[in-house]
Length: 142
Length: 223
Image (tube, rainbow over all chains, first blue to last red):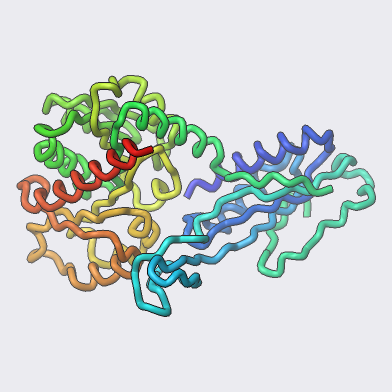
């Protein structure tokens, strides 16, 4: 949809938080995107790669944590996962369900470095790739 | 070093939408965000809805379009306050645009604001404007397969208006398949077949809307 605007918001929040910490640059930005939002990842990657040069996030990695859709059945209180279609309680077949996850669009955290781009990375720069469900979009510098 | 941020990416939009919401609550105004593709009959449906509700409620309309004042003029011609927002290319309305529009309205004198979103089945779904309910319109000529292609808008709408119903016999529109898919996406959303320009079917839609308005007002009165 409007991935440029989304990336602009991500960059604003990231640069503000990194500046407060006195960081020289941002090496990674982690976001969460729910399955039911209208975000297109290739457009997000393109916007990120286009918009980060010249900012503190130049060369940074954008890591997207995908969040599946889930709901709770109002009648039997069961929580279940589902896709976009067929939001039906697997236990009672009821349709009255409260959406729990799937509409997320959040900026979770950033990794910062004290050294400017091109300088030797400082200790502790290694980013933690623990999210098994996450995939990465490489920034302009990679 | 990792810094925790944990905030919505559309944080600014959400914050301004909450401010709009507070203004609507303070003035006991019910706000409907009406979404559809271009040409589905948003303005005609608004006019038909106004005709059905104007004896009961004071109504204003916020018109969102990329350019022109065509729609606001159509509404104003019926003696209803209308504010035109021109997004200048943006494909959806955001809460700061609504804030500027409501500054031009006398909220204290209003019961309902109908927002006509920019004609688009994708982008308006992710932007909360401070409204009480989102409703979408699909028109018969667009085809019964639209919920497969644009599932999100059918998922976030509290009700679906099926407009241009009088053309059903001309188009290859499978109503039962349409209802089935809408139901699978959004089991609690009613579907209202209407012919907005003729007024057919508007009664059932208006009845639902009145019940929705009154339940929102009752909830507000209690809080």
